[in-house]
Image (tube, rainbow, N blue to C red; front, side, top):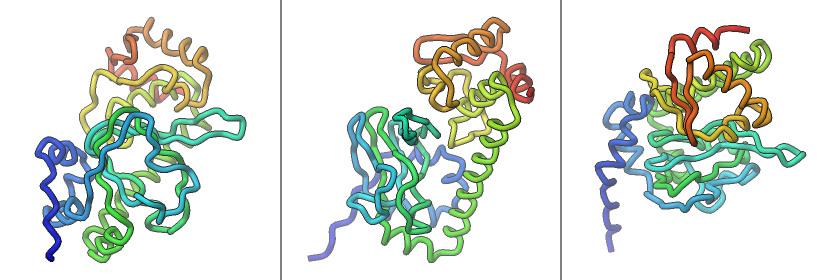
Length: 240
């Protein structure tokens, strides 16, 4: 019997994927090929999409596209403390590193809420990579990730904590890994999670956030931070 066609991705989820700058930059043929190779899966809050050290061909592995929900990318230190590397929002694709080099997963990916997740199996990803246009697009995605990592290294070695806090808030306002051109006024992230991203204690971060709030750059709320004066926060982020 012929294989039945895959059901169409709901319009709302297609719109969420299309809002991502990287995905939107792909030619239509490559966008449709990528979506056509993906299976729509559903995950509960707290589920591990993958763990650090998982082999690339583990069950359910592949290139992932986040259609709905939020994912925490993190790693655990030897002392048990967690470091959050990024928070992914709908539209982002991730998991390509292990598919390209064949090595185990470099970090944990955890559902912060219920997820709608597109999964492109390794074999289908390898087929897509035979298309030069798609392969070049993946190279551009990796280049953007490298730039982001270099920026984090620069912040950690050359900037003071207040500047680091300001710069991370600016990054989060653009969707963290997404980096949209238009920032948002509100960052929906707990102070505990932000402290884990910066590698500082919750108390230390609280002092810096309160100082920024007193200077009129931000306003603190439950589970969110509102950017009141974006340009002033940017100037603070360029400080030492």
